[in-house]
Every structure is written in C-alpha cells, then in structure tokens.
Image 1 (tube, rainbow, N blue to C red):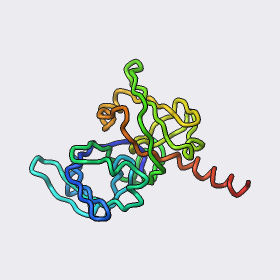
Image 2: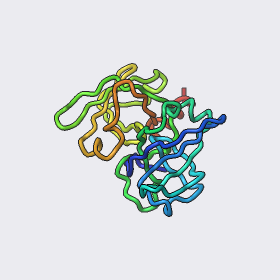
Image 3: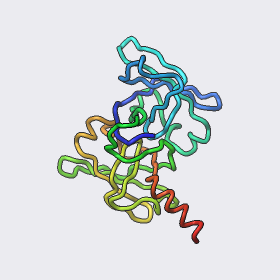
Image 4: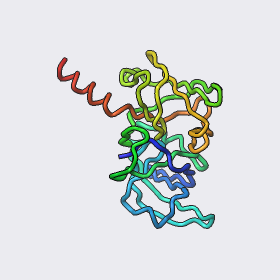
Length: 201
C-alpha cells in the first residue's frame, strides 16, 4: 500500500524484453535498504524487486519485471533508457498518510493534452478512456504516475489537475511534456462504490 507521496525520482537505465519486460532502475535509495521481494511503486505501478546492486556513482539500482498484462494497462512500453519515473516505498504502519490510499494497481492510461502556467503552479490537462471517467470526480483524489493529486475539473473524456512548485521540483513531473502517456489509478473508494452499485442495479 502507498500514499502517492513521491520520495525519489528514479531513472530507467536498462530495458530487456524477453516475453515479460525487465527494467533496471537507478535511485537514491540505499542499496542496503532495498530487500529482494520488497515492493516499490514506480510511476504508479507496484513492482516486486528481483535484484539490487550498488552503482559506481553512489546510487543504487534495483530490477523489476513487468508481465504482458501490466504492460497492456500502463505506459511501460514507452519507458526507455533515461526515462525519469516517480518512486515511492511502501507505507508502514504508523506512517503519516499525507496523500490518499494507493494500491499501485494501474487502471489505465491518459495522455497529457496541455500544460499551462497557473500562477506559480502548472495546470495539466488529460484525456483518458470513457470507461474511467465515471470514477473521476471534481475535487476527488486521483493517482497519476504514482502521484496523489486532486481533480480540478472533469468532463466526458478530459480532466485536469494542478501541480504546485514543490511537487514539480521533487517528482518526474518536471520532465512531462504534452503528448506523454501517464498511468492512472482511480480512487479506491470510487472503485468499490461503483462495484456495489452494479449489484444493486
């Protein structure tokens, strides 16, 4: 379980495709603190660490594997060497819940349609598939590339959020460009409320 509060910006340093996709990601997390089998949320996707090593530049590198199912629901196929991604370690009992509860299970993707300056912040617009729109509510929570954000507005296929300067500084959002594809996880509560309504209907 995660909170959508990013704790590091990772860099993809190797991609191997042999059926599944194996990714090696560099981070500032100490190698000794990353256990094989532990979870790390990478731009919204909960991955299991399968290998860890220390790098000569002082960073660590951990490897993860993505199945075809994960690739089909996310932006992984667009990741390449040099891609910057948002990282978060799992929530521990007693930790402060500053964002919202995030599972790391991506529901689909969206495309950045615009980026506009809004005071000191930046306003981002997104287009996504119609199936996800009913789960997105104005002033509700949404997880985009692993980041807990508040929805500003939403219509039949578009929605928007604001990112404050601090968020832009400490996340990979500072590298985002119009046309980029992002991972979307809808709010967990919205998912279960909709499921209950299916049975009642």
